Image 1 (cartoon, rainbow, N blue to C red):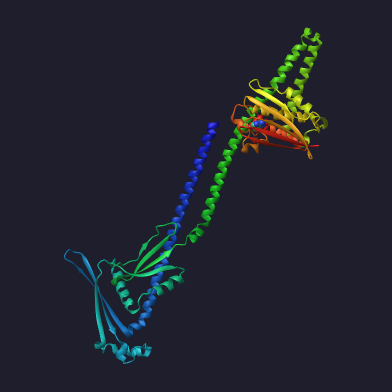
Image 2 (cartoon, rainbow, N blue to C red):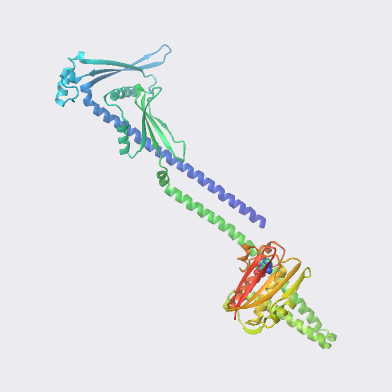
Length: 489
Ligand code: ADP
């Protein structure tokens, strides 16, 4: 059974650990997923913001365009000698100095009326036009549409250059805080590139978007992914996982505890039966012996022997009845139900009587020292106090080596009387000391062959409580123990 419980215990711990690892793994997956979701949403926001900004720039440059530049786009596709389709784009930009044409100051912007006039004049003023042609190989562009768009972006950049402030204000309006850098790439890229987060502790991601592809100009937008927001989004999942884990762990531990408790109860039942048989054996065999003596006419004729037999019978019956009252008192464990018959008596004489009747194990050399003053009179229930002291002495003999010294002394205090039962036995560990007065608690002794049910000291405490007194213990392992009883007088 013990082995099975151990295996169950190990398996349960392993199951708990495996479950926790699975939970952590699952939560990690959820966390990663939430980060990716956040990244996707942010990337979408960024691409929308860039489109919005480009549209704004295009709108802004429309007015200027008339006054300053006119562009035309052209795309040529050839099949080269190895049969590969080559795409070339060329942009012709005509820079027009509108102010020059209208003969006005260079610093002033044109009014709408002036622009209208300018539109009419442009075609006649070709000598005022500065023409630039840019031709770029756009074979790597994924589609013609993208190549056309690149030309528009090129033109847009000339009219209204891309600025970090411009895109930043749009991103902020969309609740995105980002680090923005404009870079010049080594080669032409046509589409945005997203560099996903690599760390889960401080996750960040980067989007590199070309804004003037033909000039290899791109903007790098780097965002921090706020962990607190991710965790907040996972709030319910986290709470549920936590509650479930705690619930499962409690159930498993409870299960183990119940099994351990049941095993202990089973052990206790066996120990109880063994001790009961042990305790009953002695008085019953004495009684058996006495009854056979009574049956012997010759023995009965001897007055001295007859008296001895009657006395033995009485002692055996007293022991039996004391044992049953002990069982009854412990079973009810109720101080009020213990009848007290308080009388005044001589303590030293009582202890002498106890020391004479205590059964000394044949394997031990025992020395009793009764240091109680001969005239020490106290008030208590003599039969209960006898039980108390007998139990303490029996324990002193049980939990000790071969040479045992048991010393009993007492002193009068303003609160009452103090009785000390000291031994030079095994001693009690600090952890056990606080629990030995509990019912069925057995200290280290339970691991040895020393018989017992863990009821003796709880019974002693019950009887001391019934007197309104106190019991305490001082002990050093390997040196001995002193049990002190304080009884009010
Ligand atoms: P039991 O003797 O049946 O185990 P008790 O209630 O009398 O039950 O004692 C409880 C525990 O206290 C014992 O198991 C033992 O470990 C410890 N104990 C009691 N008296 C002594 C003592 N004099 N010296 C060392 N240990 C003791």
